[in-house]
Amino acid sequence: MKEDKLAVLIDADNVPYANIKEMLEEIAKHGTPTIKRIYADWTKQTVSGWKGVLLDNAITPIQQYSYTTGKNSSDSALIIDAMDILYSEKVDGFCIVSSDSDFTRLAIRLREAGMKVYGFGEKKTPQPFITACNKFIYIEILKPEPVAPTEPTTTPISSPKAENIPLNKIDKALVKLIVESAENLADESGWTFLGDLGNFILKKKTDFDPRNYGFPKLLPLIKNIDKFEIDERSAGTSNIRHIYLKKK
Image (cartoon, rainbow, N blue to C red; front, side, top):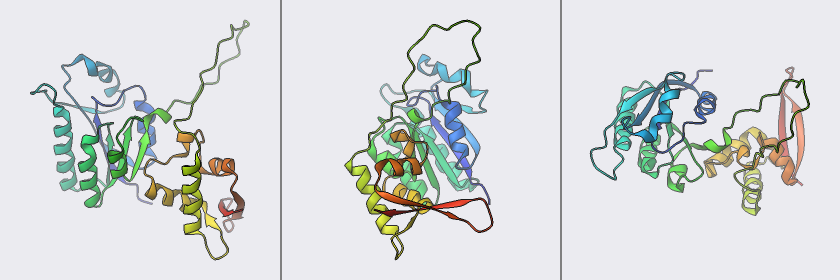
């Protein structure tokens, strides 16, 4: 299966650099990042943290001077480059990394041209930009996996563990979304294929991700809400098993 070629365009003024490694790993799940560019006025101290991670991650910095106070000229540079890349026909999709709603129209235009658009930003990202993307991922959930400590030679001093607090709580609106989506897709016997369900929910809610609710995958989330029967079916002679669910 052919992997999508992706252009990764980062707005350095509106996203932190701390999780760039995890962000690029997440992007790799959706395709191959063939173009990686980051936009900022690199004379400013506010983006100095990005300078240390660009080389290690092969990201090309684009200098954009701020000619007018209060205006983000990096937005214009990113948008112009995105349109140039679109017309070059060298990629199948775009990853726009920003928490800024100014890229809403860009995301819509790219999708109109048949491009897949993945958005990455903080939880504070305005809803119009989130909705304009095919899928939007909050960077707060892209945390590095904890490393197992080696056995200490002495008794360690106990310290409180950092809690991985979900961005959202499971509420009635989420349960309704999942139940109604499963009913929309159900066959005559009432069963829904889990893989189809995840894609269908994403079309309704582009920022849906089980990790937002503290679950690594959709199936554990489904089991937690306790509204469905679960059926694991063998996929022919392979060891792969397909998951189906049916409302109780």
